[in-house]
Length: 284
Ligand code: GUN
Image (cartoon, rainbow, N blue to C red):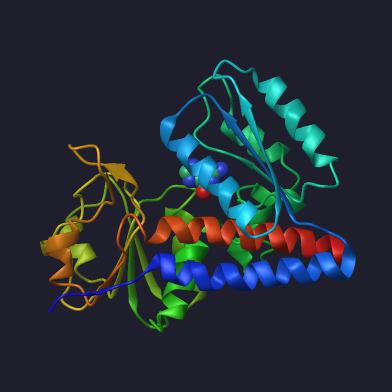
C-alpha cells in the first residue's frame, strides 16, 4: 500500500496562520514587531535560497526582517562586530547566521557570540544545554519542525523505536534528544554504524539527516514505518531531492515526508515561532 504523504506545506500554512495572529496581537498590545536578522557570508547558492525563503516567510507573517550579506572573504572579527551591533538593536529579536561559514571563520566562536536570548537557531551552548535538560527557551528549528509534523499527524512517539541517521549538531543530535523527551526509544546511526539496514529496519519512526540522495532504500525500512526525510540534495539532473528513495520507500512505509514540501518548510515555520517567542519574551 502506498504511504500517506505528510504535507509539510499544508501543516506549515496552518501553523504560520497562528503565528501571524499571535504576532499581530503582540504588536497591537505592546507595539513590538518581531524582528529577525539573517547574516549570510559568501555566495553558497543553497544558502542564498534558504535565506531568501526565510525573509519572505518573515514578511508574510508581518515580521520585521533584515538580511545582511557579507562577502566570502569576510574576516571573523567583522562578522563578530556585526553580531555585536545586532545584539544591541531593539528591533531585532532573533539573529541567525546561515551555516556553513567560509573556512577562515570559526563557526563555534560565531555561535557563541550570539546572545542566547536572540539565538533563534538554538545553537548556542547555553541553549543546547537547556534543550538537553528539558527546560528550553528555543527548540532547534528542523527537529522542532519534525516533532510538530508528528504531533499534527497524530503519530505517537512514546514507547516506539525511533532511529535517526546522522549526528550533526543542527539535526541529528537535537532530533535524538527531542524524540527521547517524547519517550521514544532512540538509536542514532552514523557513518561508523555497522549493519545500518539492520538497525534502520527496527524503526517505527525513521529520520534521515545524511545529505546523500537515494541513501535510504526500501530494504532499510520496516513495513508500516513512518519515514521523515530531512535531506536537501540535488540529484544527477539537478533536481531537489531528499535522502530517501521516495518512490520505492513509499511502497513500504505507512507515512513519508516529501522533498521538497516536507521538513524544509517546517524548519522555516519553527524559525518564525522562535523569533515570535523571543519578541514575546521582551513584552513580559
Ligand atoms: N544551514 C542549514 N540549516 C541551517 C539552520 O537551520 N540554521 C542555520 N543558521 N544555518 C543552516
